[in-house]
Structures are given as C-alpha cells and as structure tokens.
Image 1 (cartoon, rainbow, N blue to C red):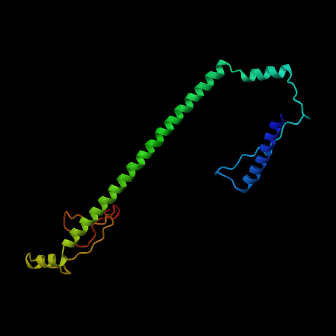
Image 2: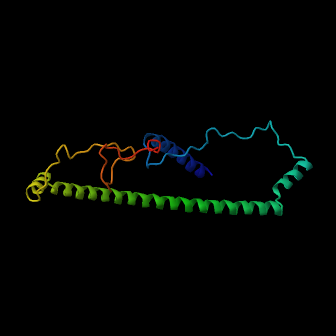
Image 3: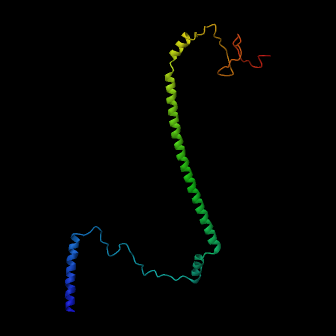
Length: 181
C-alpha cells in the first residue's frame, strides 16, 4: 500500500506540474471543455413533484388517443396540402417559362426594330430628292403648278381627299343636310 501511495503522490505532483504547464501553453486548436456547465441548476428540493390525480391521468390518456375520424381528417388535409404545393410549384415553373419566353420575344422584337430602322435609313439615304426633281422637270417635262391651278377648299369630313370628280368652283366639297334644303 505504501508503494501505491507513493506512486499516487508522484502522479499527483506530476499532474500538478502538468496543470501549471498547461496553463502556460495550450496544444491543439480546440478549447478545452469546462468540467462544470455554467448556469445549470439542479431541481430544488423545495418543490416536490405532485402526483397527478386519477382523473387528470385519464384526461391525458384521452388527449393522446386519436380516433379514426381524426386520423382520416388529418390524412385528407395532408393530401390536400401536398396537392396545393404541387400545383403551386407547377404554376411557378409555368410563370418562369413564360417570363423567359417574353424576354426572348422582346429581344427578338428589339432586333427586328433595329433591322427595320437600318433598312429604312438605307432606303431614305438612297433617295436623292434633288435628283428626282431634276429628272421630273428635265426628262419628263413636269412643272410646278401655277397659282390659278391651285383651288383651296374646306373639307370638314377628313384629313385627305380621294378625288373622284372635279372640285366645285366655290371650293366647298361637303355640305350638311340643312344647307341643301
């Protein structure tokens, strides 16, 4: 026993040295877990647990028991919830697909507008109005209208006129029904 005590005293002194050494330097990268958990309180003996009465235990058992109607109701509700979720996901994916389609169509429309404007500008640049006027006057013999040839008229019905017959001398094309009587 004495040898055992000496051995244990040696271990104790060796452990004390290791404890002081370990305070100076910590090996590894993990902090040591404290032996006692702070903030933990054991149940105080001042509050002894009361035994529940027989009626309370009976009510608790009834509350934990589920009848078949309740189980059927819960399963139907769960199935309906799953159906609603699946439909929601389908709608979301359809909306996403439509958004991508709209974006692609908008990009195509922008490209077509740009191409249309480029072609319009190319046509307008190719037309030289001075050259057209010179050709009309010199080759085709066209001349500007004289002031006697110009007849001004009032047309309350439209912005332009398709001429199917001669314009009257007074310059009035359309008359209301009251003026004819």
